[in-house]
Length: 394
Ligand SMILES: Cc1cc2nc3c(=O)[nH]c(=O)nc-3n(C[C@H](O)[C@H](O)[C@H](O)COP(=O)(O)OP(=O)(O)OC[C@H]3O[C@@H](n4cnc5c(N)ncnc54)[C@H](O)[C@@H]3O)c2cc1C
Image (cartoon, rainbow, N blue to C red; front, side, top):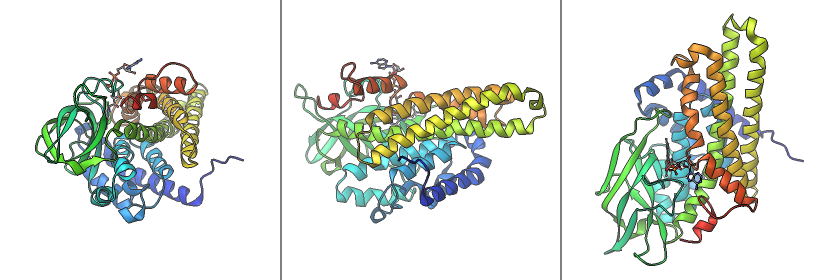
């Protein structure tokens, strides 16, 4: 018998985050978004609430929860705003998680406590200006050992949380094999402020405008050899594992946005007299939106449940990411349409939801990449982006 009913602890956490999103985030986030400003005070309060430490053991300053709990928090935050949700997702699922999963005790003890408190943020440096889907084939960033240090040269594009005043590190993927030899890719921790690491200006973005996204350049950037994360040559495989989990988290965020669109439409049709006459038409549109949001929620629950059971979940993670991001995009478009002209104004959140939804079909593997992963898991097609078969090449 499978039940998706939340247990008491999960439900309590969900309600706590829902209250936080409604009372603390909703009243002010529109202003941050329009100014393109990173919401340090909200992030600090999320830290105090323990959100950045949710899936980590207490010995590292975490809350002793699990990945499902993190996804629940992302879902509830994204019902109200995606900039703060992606700051949490990138900081925890992509930033801190590789340190916890693959780091040694020294690295965990050094970096995790500040990250778990949300006092510092970590970034995940995979994508390069030459193409994100083509990693590892299109990778150009290299690192060589010299006198007990890694010397890194190259660049990374679109890196979330890379340049805030509280960013403590980026884990960067780099080719560590010597030229002409077998391709070898490793992950290396690069602390903020390391000479040779240049943080670019904030991108001007269509959505997620209150989150931090930057380009990073490495020019003879030297870090100690001990900053290697996990085993040398296993970096790409580690990042793929991180991305499989990250896709479940991003699916939860997407499902939250899809549900937030339903919330806003219900509020709006309740407020506007004109809807009395038109409700017959719009009730089916909103019912469709609710059905999509519900499907998206069940898709990420399913992937997370398999992940927690220690079962293979790569296909379910890709299905959840694909279907939930589609639901978010469709619901954001429908919600904006229902709001009419007001949907295009910044006074209501649905316009922000519309701008934020698109990137969900792009980040952490585009929809095309998710389809390739699903097809290959069905035994169709050849190895390609996001596939372990690629990892065996490195
Ligand atoms: C706001 C934002 C935040 C981000 N944060 C991070 C981060 O924190 N860390 C990080 O490492 N990256 C991050 N990214 C990068 C993101 O993961 C990439 O944008 C994404 O993987 C796509 O890569 P790309 O942009 O290079 O597009 P490309 O890979 O160039 O793809 C362009 C188009 O071609 C399609 N395509 C590519 N290859 C194929 C193929 N073989 N067959 C069919 N179609 C194909 C794609 O689906 C897409 O539609 C972020 C991106 C954004 C926009």
